[in-house]
Image (cartoon, rainbow over all chains, first blue to last red; front, side, top):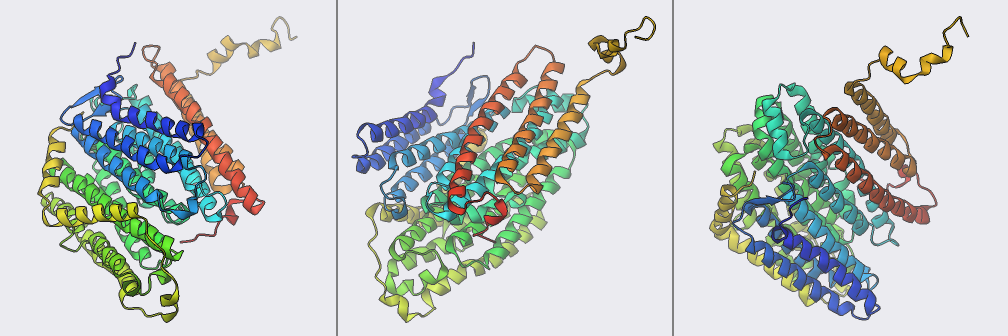
Length: 484
Length: 122
């Protein structure tokens, strides 16, 4: 008989229960209460977030050590749930979705967020695999949700094929690790490898195959091909959701495994750092360089996301306390600035009907407030003070230099300089380009919940941009109470 | 019949095991080959359903590795067997979603050749 401590699983269980409650509500009242679904689901997620924060400070594991609760996992879960709340508020004004199947849409978002919380807390290969697949399968459905739109279907199929293949490769790595150590528990694997006489090359190959699945979830370079297409084709709130929540979950699982496996990989071989450094540098360079060529805002933000993952992996490579603080800070910054930028992309698309750079021409004249807000989020993404993005990059580079990874820091700084050009193209379109035709087009109304999301993201971007201490303290707390 | 020896005796399991000793490593070879066949299929086939079948092949290779490993380590844990059951269940769910997406694509383009799914590039 397995002992299950349900108090540790409570946030996830609330989200799953809430998802079915929403779907049932929609079905029982025969789609007459669609106005009620979003407020109720926001309340459910907020309640789950409150329960999760209540667990802060405990370091425990349950269900045969497959589910680990520590402060790091709770901070990551809070980021994921905040992203979920923002997405639900943005869905309110998203026109292409219409009123059809709103209950299922919201229910699936709640299920996906619970799956991501499981992923963050996974301490066992079985749990990790099931959580990753749970997240992926729901994401495939959500990406292909607009089934009358060929772009959405194409994005769904591309996401599905990449996801299925990379999870099969990840499983092969997992099965090799099982054969080497006779356990599926991540902690047990490290012990098995450290105490057994195992060929370091085999360990390196198995762990690399294992990491393919997580690299897919994060969108790091060898597995990045799905990112721009899925970002462009998916319904825009789902694009933002994949961009923020799904990547946060991937980074959290990746960081946990990299930190736990570090002793075993140090013993096995120093090659591991080289592999990760290549992934990190390739992500930063490719993301920024190809991003410059993009004319679609969603694709531009996709390449920007690839380059950000490169910066985050630097923090994972550095490891120890400084690396972990850098990664946690980066994830918080990433939540605010990416969500804000996507919120404005949704607003502009709802008002003008397009995602191309041309639709942003003269935005400073047509809607000065939106242009100013977009500018703030873009300079934050580029890493210019006084925004949160500056400190995120600063902590990553400081950590890399402190631990002697000079090469990574140099490539990172160069990539952020090139990245500046990518974001400056949007600023140029909004402020400098002239087009008299576009001034005559009407600019539609913007729903209040979207303004609320942008306001919260703006507060986060600016406040933590001048006063980063609270987040750093939380990150240090995460590091001291890291399970395993 | 040759003398007193029955030619069909060579099909008896005891005799086969005496000639070829099947160790867990042999299962790993088989699994590696099946996995590579699946990966090749994913890369060279252009029909979405055929790609789905190749992915199933890759997952089955993983199942062979896990079952062989679990059997070699004896009955003290059920880790491998439970992992395999999870994989089978999740693969079924994944195949359903995949087929639904492929069906939706077929309605749009009357074809499931993935080379034609290239509205978005770069």
